[in-house]
Length: 113
Length: 116
Image (tube, rainbow over all chains, first blue to last red; front, side):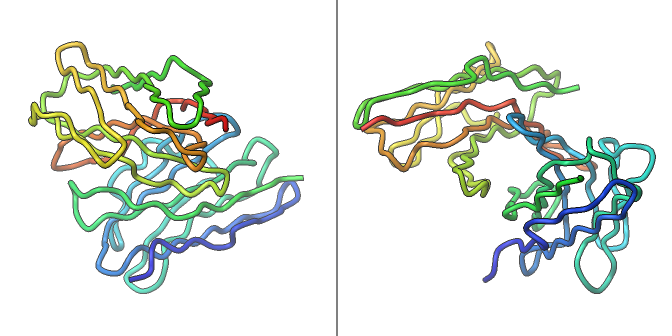
């Protein structure tokens, strides 16, 4: 049973470009969470999704950031018009249900030049 | 809002010794979960131990144990017989036991170095 798969592991973008980060949850998991980790800091909650629904996006910046978890395929975290402050590690986690333990992927490190 | 505080940015311990990492949290909830995650240099987030707030007994996983003090809102992690592979960032985390939301809130982390 493969774990949570994130890709790309490393992504470099220039200011103003778009970044797309993908997350495939563990098999059987229908709940996906995105977290952002700045250097030397803990993980900050961004968004919680179930298939085709955003449940809680209270941690998402109001502009440029969006997330989806379609019926088929991975969850996507999209950052439009990236700025240097978006440089961080973005972690995806999945769980089998509302009160399940979270299983984390290895993260995607975004660097904005 | 729930907050998680780890007051020790860095700690070190000699191999085979015991070390305790501190964590306090603030919540008005009565039912919740607490976790310790380990993040080695590979950056993988690895669950070390979890505790349900309704359980009075402290959780234990091999060399890892917790001291859960619900009234004091304290959740410390004790690592016994420290090994070099325990060197990592350790994050304390809180999760509400709620129907509509179970996002996890993390502390800022403690960097643990195990010295040979």
